[in-house]
Image 1 (cartoon, rainbow, N blue to C red):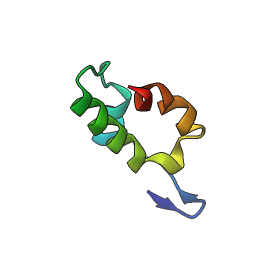
Image 2 (image 1 turned 60 degrees about the vertical axis):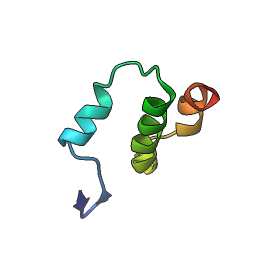
Image 3 (image 1 turned 120 degrees about the vertical axis):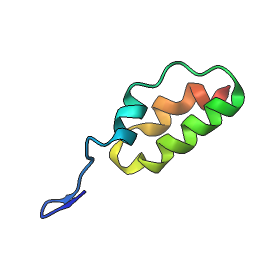
Image 4 (image 1 turned 90 degrees about the vertical axis):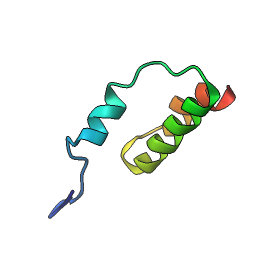
Length: 57
């Protein structure tokens, strides 16, 4: 969402889906999850540290 203070995250269905996602197992699901999370990377500080274990899979 664009505001007078800059770009902010909204509480949309996409944000809620990322927050409520279950632990992925198959590699294709992990790749989809990382792709979805990378879309919001500018709002997530230390993203590389957080996603490191998933990328190592």
